Each structure stands twice: as C-alpha cells, then as structure tokens.
Image 1 (cartoon, rainbow, N blue to C red):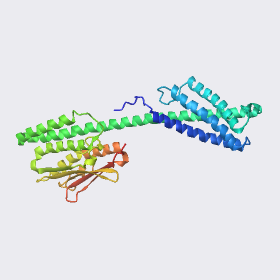
Image 2: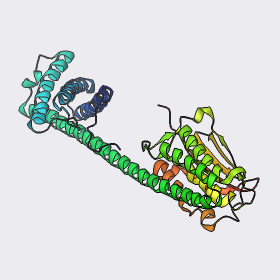
Image 3: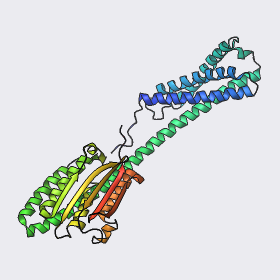
Image 4: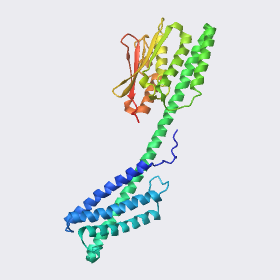
Length: 359
C-alpha cells in the first residue's frame, strides 16, 4: 500500500511547467494592467505594456526561481514565514527598478524618469506594482497549496481503494477454500484415491496463490493461469463431467486486472450450472478487446438461468456480488458485469472495463 505520508518528489519537468504557467499568467496580468493604465490616461498602451511586462516578468522570474531554491522539501514549494516575505519584497524592488530602466530605455526617457513625476503619480505607480505583485504571489501560493491538498486527497482515496480491494480479496479466498474443502469431504468417503489427488492439487494451488504477494493487480495471463489451476482442481472431483477452454489472445496477456476476478464466475458456473446437470458440461473463458475496452466472457453449457439458484440468477450470490463490487471499486461506472442466457444453452457472464492507456 502506498504510504500516505511519503513525501512527493517533484520532478524538474514539473517545476519547469510551473514556471512557464506562472510566467504566462503574469504576462497576461501585465497586459491587463497596461491596458487599464492606458485607458485611464497614463500614456500610450504600447509604452505602458513595456513598463508593465518588464517589471512583472523580472519580479516573477526572481520570485519563482527564489521560491524553488528556498522552499527545500516544502510540498507547496513556497518558503514559509519571513523568508517568503523577504523574497517577494526584494524581488519586487529589483523588478520595479530594473523594469523602469528597461521602459525608460525603450521609450527614450531619461533613466528613472518616474522620479520627476508628481508625488501622486509616483505613489500610484509604486502602489500598482506592489498590489499586483502581492495579488499574483498570493494566487500562485494558493494554487500550489490547492494542488498539494488535491494530491494528498488523491493519495487518501487511492489508499482507501487499495484497502477495500484487499478486504474483498481476503473474503473471496476463504470462500473458495471452504467450497473446495466441502467437495473434498465428500470425495474422502466416496472415492479416497481421487480425494488424495484433489488434496495434492489443492496443496499446489494454495502454495502458488495464498503464499504469493498480495498485489492490487496482476497480468491477465496470471489470472488465467490461476483459473487453469482451479479448473484442474475441480476436474479431479468431476472427472469427464468437466471440460473447459481458456482463450487469451497474446496481445492481452499483460493487461493488469484485480486478482481473483474470474474464479468466482467459474465457480458459480460449476456449482449452479454444471453440477446439477448429470452429464456435466463445458466452461469457456474468453478475453477480447472491443472499442478500447477489455471484455471477458465466462460461458457454460449448464442447466441455464431458469434452473439455477434464484440468488445467483438475480446477481445476488456471494461470488457474483463480490466481482461486481470489485469492478465498481477499481473502475467505477466504467466497470460492468452482465448475466444472460448463452445462445447454445447454459449461462454467460460478461465483464467489461476500460483497457489501460499505454504510458
């Protein structure tokens, strides 16, 4: 499980994206300020734009680079306390004078010509600079804080989803085990040699599954392999009454799926489809892709929905309910399960969920 408290490492690419995003926002604000000053009679818009962009972009660059250097491991990427205030004050002071110098050079005025303006004009110029810098800096800080809080929320939601999937898996494994032990108990009395063979299969199955790592997902090929082990285990008890086919295309073998997703469906087919039928039948598990979705069908030639246990036909049985809940937990509204009569008799259960997007 991903630890919620683990510090998030911000990559160089993310920092560069933040710098560029902040720069573009600052430039847009400078254009608005220049337009407002020009509209209020402060001078030509092009001239005000040069002053505004020069002051704003220099201040932005100093603040943004400075915050990355001074913030250390702070997840919001802003220096706290006095250091943050000093950074903004020094940056805006340098930006103001350097920007004024650039604007004066561009417009052909004497260096720092704003000193010759009236006191009201000077106070207005400085006030606009300070207000704009404080507002934009606070906006960027709030944006970083919001992004950090969203990241923490995503981690918490992911941990909750992982915990729920683990709980569902720990419920499914004993359910399968108890059913198998019940079948084994019958064989011990009726056919001891087959009971021993089944016990050996069960031992191998448990060694490969229960002792393995409890990953939240594994390749679809691993799911099919586990399914083959389970069907071989059931074949010891049912003999020729159980036939099966597993069809997994090569290009879908590495598709990640939750563990124990298919076994409850196969177990349901055996218990409520094939076992009540004297001659048994066949189970076919087939995977395919359709319009960017993974579709898995579990079909059997059993007694069909009309003769099956009412709770199972209504989708309320333990196995089917757990599969439906795991789909909802992992894929949300995009995970679907349907239960219908197979065209050739028996039952078909279909799972469908989005294929993962290639990295």
